[in-house]
Length: 424
Image (cartoon, rainbow, N blue to C red; front, side):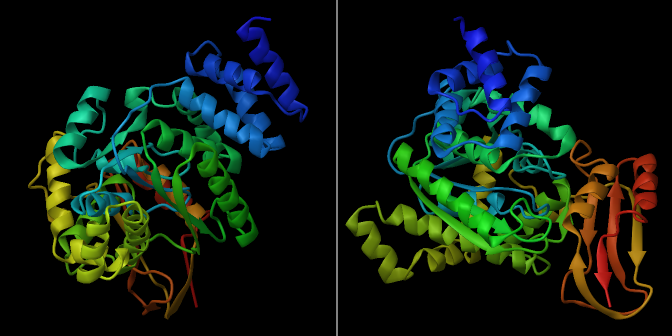
């Protein structure tokens, strides 16, 4: 049987709920990775995984095949990484965590994705500040110079089958639990990461809505980490709103810079969330560091969280971020105050008094996309009010931004069907 025939038979079998062998899964990934399948067949496979799911063994096979059908990068020693399962717009912790970890002296080559279900992925946001498209050789040079990078994984043929699957999933804004597990771990392993922290939020309108779902996903991440012999820490936490106030590439990049700059207007909740990830990642790396490094950190800071906070407060992380921006062909002197959102704006004011009870994450995602994000990087939403904050009549609840008058008008009209904030 040819590889194409094996792959087609594998898709047929998966559509009716059969378990696949490594040979079948490798054949499917190879066909998709090398664009020998069209979008229709690729979509059939994506749909089969969403409806039928995969066993743990199949998830391992998928991850392994996805890695082996693309390029792989290799770095020496401790190689750190952080990833969120996504689904929460406006929580751009990666652009804070990466410079903190690199400033600590650990290697952290971050392969980031573009938006799948949100109005901006990390690669989309970083592209506001610098280029994210580099060759394998260029990435090695950037990391050698700065200790870290934030680049688009699709530019170096890392797990190319994943990018093809993302393309067919994007129009429907869906991604199965098993699929994003495979997607994340394949790109982490292919990028040479061996110490990984996973941010796994759950809650209403998140990818994982229930704690049971989150715990299941956590166990699967740990299973894959064990199979690939890498260290992992999965942080499960309940979430009901974005970490910051801005949604959309430029607004999210501006918030990350404000945290690094320690600006008075920085979003404190985004800062706390970034530290809650950077701290455990430093602890994970420290556990495999030399005894002299461990003793030094313990004496000076106590633990990874306090070390991360020092690197942020002292602006060592900001200096490192500027180094990374420069190495990635951006302006190292860029500041948050120079990042201006779209010129077409609309402010929504409160019609009464009360307290914000809910921020509808899915509706915010829909409206931000209508405004033009992520293709229009200056488009998005800024929440002047968030959950728990008091509202007086006439207060600005949120502001819509767009680069297009047409898109702004469409978004304004959509608010009737997709309300963003609830207060009483």
